[in-house]
Image (cartoon, rainbow, N blue to C red; front, side, top):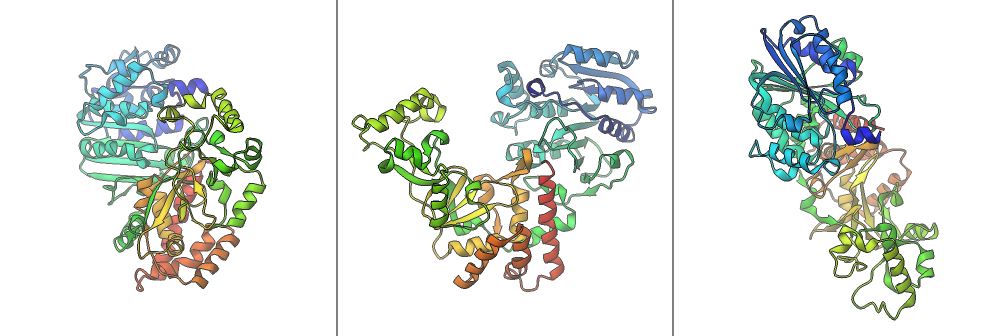
Length: 532
């Protein structure tokens, strides 16, 4: 597994390669076709090409590039045809100053994080991004983006690109420039998403198929979701055009056009979360396990005068929309790390033997050598502690996002965003209004998900969530809190509150539309957790 992680070698299933080759054969016309496979791996695409009865007869030249010599030997053994040229090279070197064009560029580029790349590879990736001025050099996060960008450049004026890619292309903000580039370079774009993981040994990495055609009679962006892999081979799928593809993210592909239109129609009448509140990241300690301690440690090192109460992570406040003082006290009794060591300039460290001992422990653990602690004037002084916020929004979640009122008046780490209400708006109203299928659907669409189906929203993604804010009385809010604690799932809350909250936007909204929005949220949620 570690070697696969380092070289990005998660090889394409045969059913995918066979489908793509057969599907593309109907789009490619004429003889003397030239094909490039920039990351040949074990040669599954090359094998599918030469095994295909039609496409194999139209080939003039196939170039297979692979940096692993033992894998390239497998590719060479696939066919004796002189049309196959195998090249033992890193694609990043092969592409340098290479001006060839191909009718088809097909493959599954490696997935390697920037931190695992060599300096020379990073340099090549940055230079590749410079081929298109709209791309930012600092957007290099993973090697697959450079493979995609350079491969687009290899596609001829009437050619086709067909890649297996991580679903990050649909979701994350850093890929927004790539999405814009794809729309600019190809007249027709097709995206296939899957309910099954294509790579069982790469847990949590969702995958898609991207097909881009330089020229097409039927222009536009088309998508379909594949329930089972066998549906591909048996042609049990229908491509639908996505009319809202210009959205900054493409997660909308998981929805039908009428579902997207319904969400967007209602969204136009709403303010976003940032209209009602301000939010910012919580406290960055640089070493939670050291700076956030339990009551035993507080007593052992006589830290009581120097600590502040804090919530470290969302799992400590499961199942509620209010953190009460009693609930926080129970966390303390359970020996959870609930105290932030908040030393400052006024702390007399040299004259306090116990604190000095704890700091020596930190030096032994090399906490002082961490990147963020090196930026501080004194490594042990956690900056920007501030005051307890009105509420927290935890940036990561499993079943549903957590927006929680802070009745315990405690601090939070950067696992959450701190919430302060703007004038004329109330935190109870915001929390009540937040939990509806529309807002939660946009949380699924605007955020990103990864290993284990965890959903994450960046600060801006939270700020831009549409919220149908409504005023509720104390009695109604207390009833909501009680119902929230007693729920079996978030569906219980949505079923109870959707009609009331959504009709507060427009009294004419019908039950069918409300039920459809409920189903949309459930569909998006189930799609996300399938990566478990």
